Length: 456
Image 1 (spheres, rainbow, N blue to C red):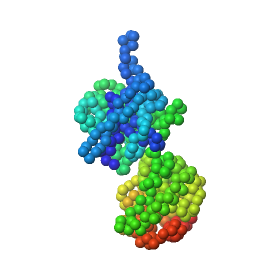
Image 2: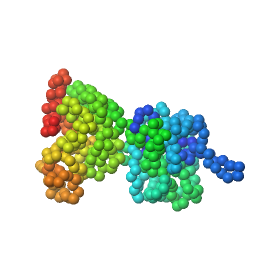
Image 3: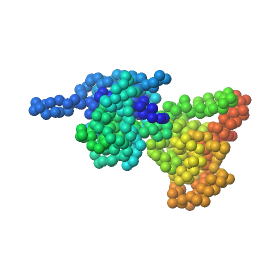
Image 4: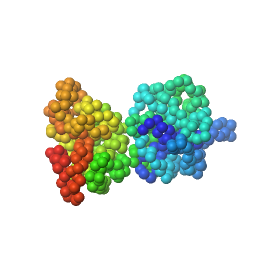
């Protein structure tokens, strides 16, 4: 992900802006925006200005950006406002959800975060009226936030860098407060209308993401809206095509049968009662390495690891895929993940201080990191100097381990998740070349995975 993706997720909504968000469904896509964009100002019989909400069946112009080899082009999304069907406003806060059907594609790498810090590197991402241009891509701009100022009411405020006037912001109402975090975009809120047209000292208002969740929880809307989680949290089926995409280079033909076999075996997990959302609710931050933020649980990579991990366990156990079995297994074989792109050696401290409460002595910890380990260190061993140093110099007060246990690296076996793919299959691709039947292949895989057999 990069800053061009912030532009791709940003849209023009009527006289303002908005942000795409893919909720936990494949049936439709959201645009998160400001409620006041859908009100007219009218004078009553006394000559006083009143705000009046758009009536049902009002068409609204929505424009999105598409990046091509020749630059950015714009595309119109047909949209008609119908309250409770396509338009879902908050009762108090200046925020609304637009429900777009058919769904837009490739907008599932955005996560909702309720973390508000006093200092931040988030941006306002929208379309001020002052910028010209032939398409939406040329009208787009960002303004960096210097710090967030939390408030007890629905609208917080943010201090922007630089000197800006009201005219620089008009047209950005409803835009997302966004930043790129690794392989996804984080959104913490939607810009709301200014309380004053004077635009004091470079401050803007925004509505935190938690108030959008309140819209989804309204009784009258609950049946028509899905939660602000990516669709792959609803079912492992969204991840099947990306599972076990092993690459042995010139030896790929040797393991084609293995890849197809394992992909097919994912169906047993997909058709079970297990879902990413259910596992997330069971364990929450115990699924993550120390210091990984809760929003990391919305990363596609982590749930892809879980699909592969459950498929491998199912090969060994041959059935019993249930939340109860996962809960029991978590005390014997634990999978903890990080969204880092670095080698797992850079995560050693975070591995040590992760939550191991409930994990039995001699348990197995599988560490999920994207990058295969350097120098083929797939298992943490006291022979590695860095491990010995960690054993000597750790901070006992930070350990999250049951009483009676000494130190995670002494009590448990730590295995890199890529052991089960790169080490057990890819590096041994020639050994699979002559295996033509599933029974022999299953026996071979079980032999490679005997490292997990302690708690089979």
